[in-house]
Image 1 (cartoon, one colour):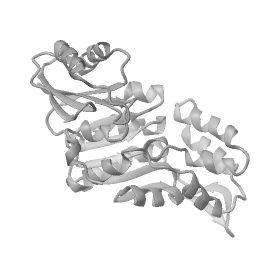
Image 2: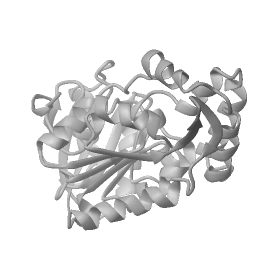
Image 3: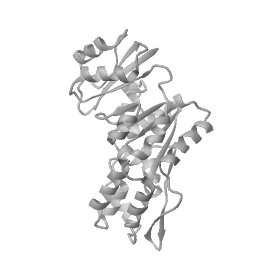
Image 4: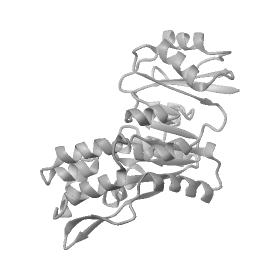
Length: 296
């Protein structure tokens, strides 16, 4: 099988050099010439082999040692994806929106603990969301605008990722277990063509502590991936999904390339690929894009 190993590090902390590449070449079966996608940041190494991909990744990780380098191994064919679904909180942005809202109610620490347990898969997502939203009762809607303006920051590489994929014909969808009050703004800022999320119920300018049912959770995220695949007449191999929490696992596991991004342990263990060090441009390098092909 024709495969490719992509070694990627954070562009803010370049860590790749010829010594590391030589070490990778030494443990890969029938490797070809290394191709730099961005000097010191990302490199492709094509190779041929029938060995289990996870076994190959393990050897590459051992050769890497403690260096902050991500490794993605996959078939060379169909690397450039035509459909991209992304989680929002702690993936496309650096925050958890519900936790930031809870801060205005003086409950951030309490709500953050519930969020963490839900994202780790220790408790069910839907009741955990209802519990957290109930604690937001009577918060003024104006708080949402303040959180968006002062606290929400796109993850480095997010716009380059979305706009480069769009420029190459992909459809992009932000799919979140969070809230449309945030996804509408975040999707527009980063460049997504559509977004889907839960709807907070408000009355007289205040949150009522409820979310519109049914809740968009793990099952709906997976269903959205399958729906968009069918709508665009795509195969599973044509799809890229990224997320960090347990409610992302269904769509991550069903994607052509499912990526756990700085993810919870159970998600990172189950995903086909994991990015622990890089920013979101890592997902472009994983598709074989060179730095000079990026679009902003």
